[in-house]
Length: 119
Image (cartoon, rainbow, N blue to C red; front, side, top):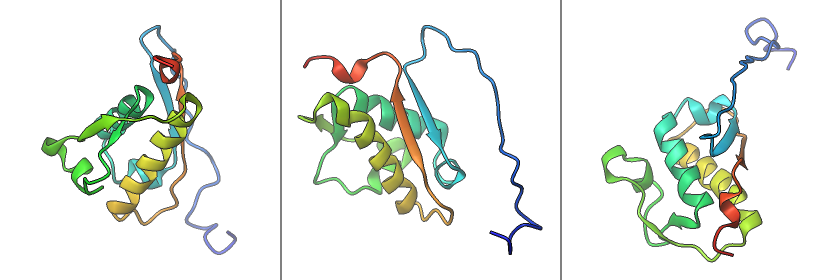
């Protein structure tokens, strides 16, 4: 956006991190997510989705981000390929519920194939 050029850098923030055998998933997201959700909440949502759990339909999405209340979960019958997409969608909705004022892009990658367990 040429109007924002004086205040917005086109230089991406890049870090190189060595993976370990304990790494379960990779979450790529824009600052629209990271500005409003702490790492531990983001990781819990992704972890639960990849294992076939999702917030109960009757629970308010805002309850899932209230730290101590945690994430109420029920077993999901979703297909394995959709668990990463479900995690990305839920994280996007959580960021919107937290009134993120920035663009929100989220990609969740299952590094261990957890989303295929039990199917």
